[in-house]
Length: 594
Image (cartoon, rainbow, N blue to C red):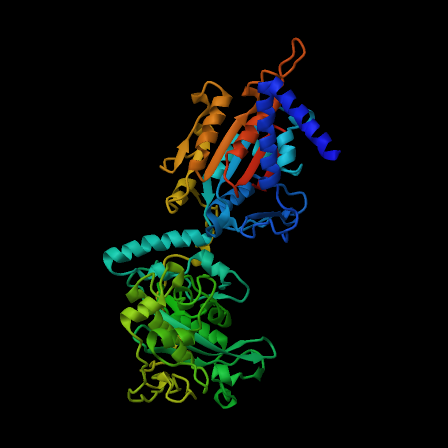
């Protein structure tokens, strides 16, 4: 009985459809689109279902991270668009999570300029169905068309990207000239700040010079290392400091009496013993004055995790070369630093920091030798962040021979002024500090000297413009052969018109109607990875079947509805779809992965 009624019903429907071929075709097209949207585009509610593709990009909004009352503005929105296009090379947005972003095949961004009463009088059925009635209200600056499109077409550069681009230029210079300027390896002001280096003006911090001079290829390098003990005043206080020049000579080596009482000598790491500290009167102030006298105004300080040494010295210096920053053989994360011990064994074939303890001279010597090796080999050497691979290096250069100190031991000479010792009596067996020439003056007599000064004060130069830099989107596209952009909007509003071959323009004014414009965009959409479209609702022609009262302007909402549906239908699966409806008072964002 049930089957008979079902057949009768189907026969009646088929007969009705054949009575009106136009209606049948229209309903067939609509049914096909609804079925496609329902089956393949509608996101699965539960990620555990068997139909869910684990590699499909997934979108999760975290708007609470924006802070109370803050709405997405042009720059924040553009940051997300750029991240979805170019991935982790750009800063990851905080307010949204896009997992498997590398599997996003296309990015469709549609801006619809609507009339002022649109949001109170119009409901687009396609938007409600496809985006499941979920939307986000945007900041008022999105109403500015020029600002909106310029934000998208200009990619904000992260500090890491700026450094990367700079490194590429410097590497080309090295390949051409065969050498690097020492200044290429000095940490920038931003990097010093990121790594918590002391800066002039901070409480208790003194500069290494009152006046500095611009560094050059001939600027001398001095390697510094400090040993610290725990006291009742601070977790770590300076108890020994060594400074070594480029010829491995000892420039300064002295024990330092800390301000507080030593509670732990941490001899295993510091090499400092109670007997060594007996009778020490040299203060941190003495050391600071000696350093100010010893260093020339264009000195480059070398070290490993040098910020810790400068913090212990309570001094600041503008030109710092950190071997833990320029050498990184295990991890592509630029914040990761290999230990000085491992770097020394791998690249120099030498053993330091033995079970007998650390020696600040030996650590300073190792940092200087590593810095010199880096200058000799070039920017890419020893850093996987720049594509260097140790396996290839070892294959081409062979294993580094381990070196043993065999030079004759040099007896420390007393200070020429006061006859006091000029270096520390190190407790590490066969330490390198025993086999090098020693300074002629002790720390107390050095500080009396007068040192040359430079012509600029570092603190005055810190008032720099920290405005974020941007680069045209075409520059990023050059690095990726698979990506290109279609700009289906008036590019005349851009501050910097696109000149890249990977950015092409398609103007509505080149077509007799919006339908022709949209059809052309939809037909070519699969050729591009990024499609940027702008539509003015008021310019869309209403559908012919739209009813209107006599004397009223025909409503074109349904025509707009079909245009948006056609654009989405033309994109590939796993595309990120963003639609912005904007007028002078309100801006709304719809976003989801197809």
